[in-house]
Length: 328
Image (cartoon, rainbow, N blue to C red; front, side, top):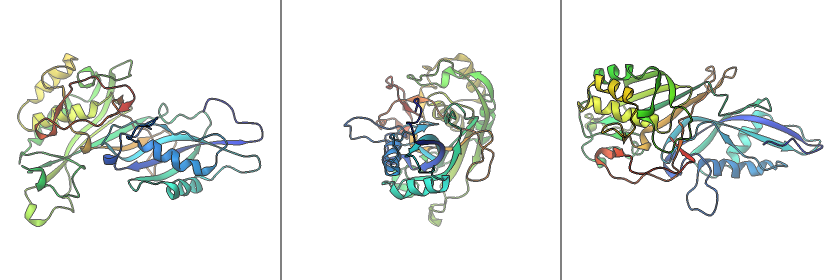
């Protein structure tokens, strides 16, 4: 996307919002080469081939997510270069065309905007929000509805001390060095981030839970920042769950944050990917599909492969350095 358009052609840049269920993908980023793994970006760019752009369309993703992570609304920019005499696609036509040619049912393009030629989906983002879903009262995996599997972290415990979790979350708010919550392999040059919001709240009862399964309860953790370190949200979630289960106190969370040590006993735990959702990516001056002022979202980058199952409760410790290129 660095070179100018060929003589006689017209190039238009678009910002596209899209969503996906991450279960079947090796993350959002494209997987290049003859590998069996595939990313959401591979399908988006395959659909974009049908636009017949003079130059192949490449999606520049705002917020890269790891294998198994979902997105209610992610974003990317792309250039479409049409031949001389052909006007640029309208955002509505572009959205419809991409959805028509997408070959995976777990991906949907939500909306598109025309943007300036120097707009960048990653660097122009002003706010990113992630939510993490928990379920309590699930001693065995087969006790969770099939419609909720791979959509939440099912905990064996019947009870979480939500008040303690909320108190602990307050220690994370503001501008801090979040090194203690960063996984190895992050490309970020600075581990200082400003966490604008960290909340823990009950989720409305799932419509997929039967009356005889009333012991199941759902909870949502939500985090907002301009940007996040690699796996920062999943590691903060794991720490807050430990507080909710009584394994840590809120004061100990403050101590962990101030330690700046990512290899400590508790902060190496990472919540499973399948409970995490990228909720929104927003940009100043734009409005998202719901009509909210726009900003952007991104949990930093990391490994590309799926995590191996292992630890009890699916809470895993970091045991290897991830390859650069994958993400939250």
